[in-house]
Amino acid sequence: MLKAARDNTRLGMVRMFSSNGFMASLYYCLISREFDREHRAVLLGRLQFARLMQSKGENDAFLRRNVHRLEKGLIMRPRRSTFAEDYIGPTVRCFADATHAGVVTGQQRWANDVLTDYFSAVQSTPRIDSARREFSGTQRADDPNRCVPYPHSDLPECPVSYEQLMVLFRRRRSVRWYQDKPVSNELIEQAVRAATLAPSACNRQPFRFYVSNDAAKAADIAQCAGGTGGFHDNLPCVIAVVGDLGAYPEARDRHVIYIDGSLAAMQLMLAFESLGLSTCPINWPDIEEAERRLAKKLELAYHERTVMLLAVGYADPTGGIPFSDKKTEQDLIVFK
Image 1 (tube, rainbow, N blue to C red):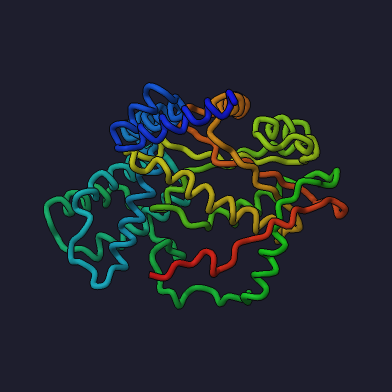
Image 2 (image 1 turned 30 degrees about the vertical axis):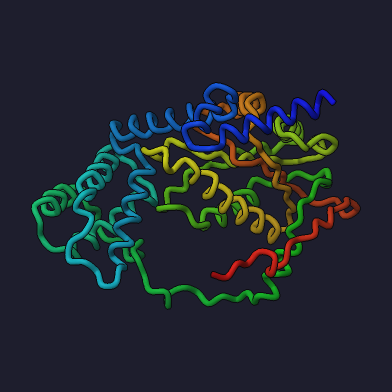
């Protein structure tokens, strides 16, 4: 009776405070503190982005985003004679700062090649000419294998049929029981190499994979999550997919770490399956105590948020797998 009365009271409050946006904000300010971590993490992420913008060539996400925007302008049909005037100056300065600081990465090579093509394609304006002069002082020599937009016809032929792909999808099950057999770092690196090819908003890739490739450490990390009781000490390797809110200057992009991190995690799981390794994604709800425990163990900054945990290992052939009946395409498709 008391539980029913309490639940009805809570539901009544939710009904009242959900009437409009202002009332909803009051609810999460006065009644519930469930979004406190997200609010603070988003603000600290914005501060981190601003700090990186003031550093010399350290804002990887800013350069990635803008170079990708230039690529989209270069492939537009019809291509405009001038574009990107509002951000080409800061983009070149970020590239130049990194170059002067001696940063040598694949991203720098990609940025160099795309900027070279951009300045060859656009017409003259005062802002573009100013950026062109600055870029000319840092431009690197052309590489025969240039990192620039290319036609769809250059993609390799797909050797995988739909039926073969469905076999991979059916094999990718959530496995909770593993052999007492270590997972090599080389295979983890191979799988992550495949995961980097997952789509990411403006190619920012605002995530990292924190790998605990030791049974004791994996169990310690897995215990931070709910729902792992009974099998956490059976996991040879656990990977935490962690998003970085410091990749964004605005709160409106706060969900992108979860979208991009999940896309990469799915590709990572399929890559592991192709390498003979099984996986189990472990749900990570927003529970403050668990967030604090895991952040301490992984030494995360406050603006870094865990997207999910992922168990990895060689499946025990005798271990059970839930059937997990799936919805059909008729259940999920809504034609409009």
